[in-house]
Structure formats: structure tokens, C-alpha cells
Length: 96
Image 1: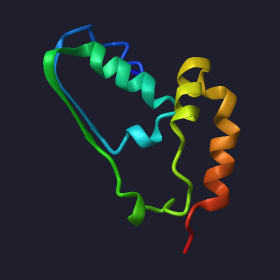
Image 2 (image 1 turned 90 degrees about the vertical axis):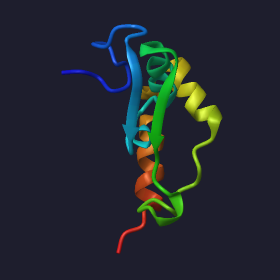
Image 3 (image 1 turned 120 degrees about the horizontal axis):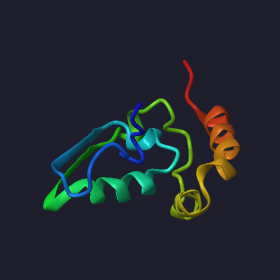
């Protein structure tokens, strides 16, 4: 099975484009994904990202994730903040 964050089965510089629709917000380590998307793209090619509108999303009440947390997840691995992300989601997700 391929890993969407690492794109390990995709050869460096082999892609004309990468399409990532509504997935980056689900990754535990989105910076790792961006790094690997850049790795697999040919020079001057396209990364297309579609992301949800936070204001109409089920977790609209959740605070915006700070870059420092994303950076820490990239540098240290997401395991160190996994419980914090989970608790943030559970305590603030909009439920009808």
C-alpha cells in the first residue's frame, strides 16, 4: 500500500502534476507531504491542492493549527502531538 504523505512508490522528478483534493488537512504530517510532492514533480510542474472552506466545515469551531505545530510534527514526527490533535478535534468539532 502506498503512503500519501511519503509518495514512496513515486520516482523523483517523474510527475507533470500532483492532484491532492481534500487530503492535506487529513495528513498527520502535511509538510512531509508538500516536500514529497515537490520531490516527485518535474521541474516547473504543477501541484494542485483543493482544501475545504473552514467556515463551512464540520470542525469550523476548531482553532487554526499554528505553523509551529506543523513544523514540530515535521521535525519530530506526528506521534508527539497526535493526542493533542485528537483532543482539539473532539472538544471543538461541530456536531448537529
